[in-house]
Length: 331
Image 1 (cartoon, rainbow, N blue to C red):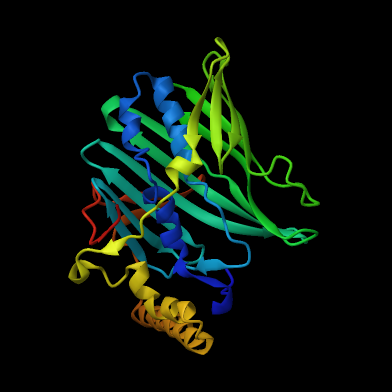
Image 2: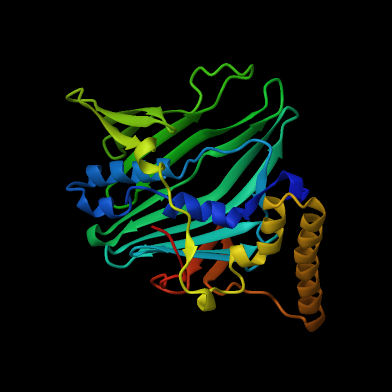
């Protein structure tokens, strides 16, 4: 991915942005997965959790491209989140998030692949996400929507595309469709989600899904016509707390905030000359490490994940069963 001048960067890494979509929530959506009485209840909770990772994007600025081996490690109560940049070309990010008390874990392995179309850039996200609810012996697999950066006639950015969420054990499936604004910029159905929940064995549609990911999303029971809200963005992503360092001595040198600290400070201070210098320093250090590995005939390997490739793509398996407590915490 191309490197942007610091003027067009937000002061954080893409790795941190991925993590924030998981731990920056006002409601504990992950723990609620265990409280669902039926497989259908739990699938609906996973749908809400998936929607909660869809966050507003600021057009015109972008996070830093993570360096190889960069990490982001944050705890929120019993929920510990760890990300690692396991490949630079292509840029592959791995996530492992666990709540040992609730016996739940999340796994991500994702690769952004921008596609230029002349009037827009579609940021397709390849890979998969998994949510494992061990108390119920259920694994949910899902993909993710794409980002569409439109330059003409009206500049803007939207989440678009189709998302499928499937429980491997029960055969229950949710299909979601994300809609952006029209070509000419009319709001219309912008940020809309429509979809359905069905039993893949009988193909019976059980619920219709409708709403907007930046406000509320509802499900309608196809038998009783009952409608209820399953996701309320205002409740989930309002009043979020900024993570803070609880134990500075335990922060890894690969932590995103440390890797990019000088650049972020320069951007916040609007010292663009210093920002350019800080960015060059990080990039040159990476090039020097690469030259050093090549001269020694060494192959770089991730510290926290075992990475492999097959015909279906990349697979990132965590080395540890549970993510340890982090020195950076959020409320």
